[in-house]
Image (tube, rainbow, N blue to C red):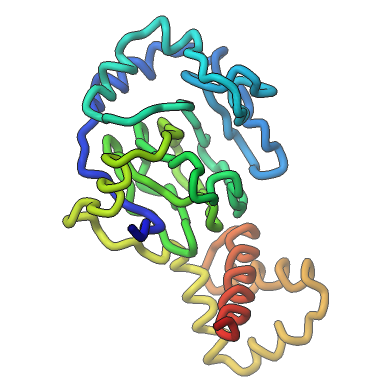
Length: 261
């Protein structure tokens, strides 16, 4: 059975109940994400279920799964997920604050054939959040449940004035979950590119010989990135340094893959 890179699962969660449980969590319960090199701004979380041998409650581990205090204190978490027949080994609330960025990376521990399967349930999902997976913008909205193959390149950019909060579940593979991922929901919108301003600037460079020569004459990568951002801004096109870096990496991958059998 071939597993897709992403899939919106045909299952309902009780979003109002989960939002009530989220609202009951105090600000002091949120802790900065352990991968400090992977983000800018506020990327923080609350562990609901995590491994006993994890270095921190938010970190991965291989030990027995422990039910953490927020999960034990509030039965609304379990009630809100009552129609999701999966074996949960980890459950975390992950928050990306306004203006926050999660830099492009891969979660290689999710790539093996027997690896846990990661599900994302958006709880707070402002419109100006780009969750990019393999160069495609995932059209996730609040209350949906998505499988994402995060062993592939992904990044998140919150351009909104509100925080984005996802309930992230790591689950053991099982017959129901595998079939649900393959089936998906037929009415799921197609993913978008997400990088509209960057794509527009790339088109300008392709059609403007002088602009192309200006950028080609910059041998240093950091100088090239800074000058590109300046030239784009002069033309009313704004994108981040990380978006540009991700676009450059994606271009290199496509170039390399065309020579692979």
